[in-house]
Image 1 (cartoon, rainbow, N blue to C red):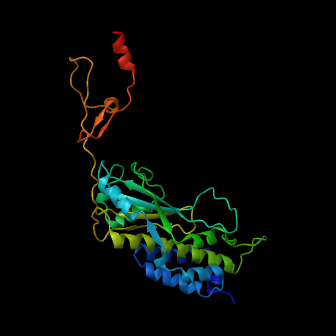
Image 2 (image 1 turned 90 degrees about the vertical axis):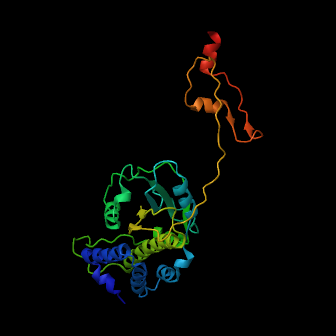
Image 3 (image 1 turned 60 degrees about the horizontal axis):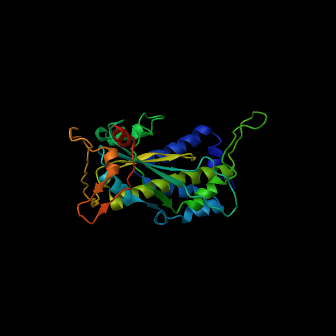
Length: 300
């Protein structure tokens, strides 16, 4: 029995319209509706991959590291963080080894201020349009903040898609004649790829709705090096309270060699000479080292 989409997707424009429909549903927040549409079309396919999509509940997919993201926003000492970028991807140099190996998607977290793009002034519609631009000038201009996050629960689906044999479809035969129907395997792969994208967006939104963020900071959820790479933007519905870590107050003692030297701000060199904490017992004595200027003054 031929799947209805096999005939429809022989026309590339029809397949593209289908993908645009799912993308528009993601952008408008109709994530459950997108899942229902995809699972409905997958239900007519009898295969292990289609079955995997049917049983892959959103409750089994989680995004770890959310508290660390909030903490990083709250404790960053530079300009205020005005956007968070979450990117799900697969390695570009992935090498398949044992058939039993599974491959979790990777999650990269980037933090942006208004330095390269005025994120704080953009409306949700403007930010979505900006995030979907082919090469935005702010992309890659993130702050030097390291936070580790991972997505759990997509490994089996991701691995099945990476190993799939029908990832591409040539719509003409060797003689240049148009092919009248798409392979069922290609339809299955495309639907499951779109399904993976929706489950990723659901995981991001679930964390944001459940935990909020330490600030009204939008989250740009994006995908890279994946078929059906769909991006969108989400905003916290409430703020998360983050306790600021108590850091010992540092007092710097600088002992210039000559009394006539004018006072100056502590430098990296003076910090390395001696650091004294608030309490006398918390003294860290760094080993003495004859630096260049000390040797110079010693000869004078």
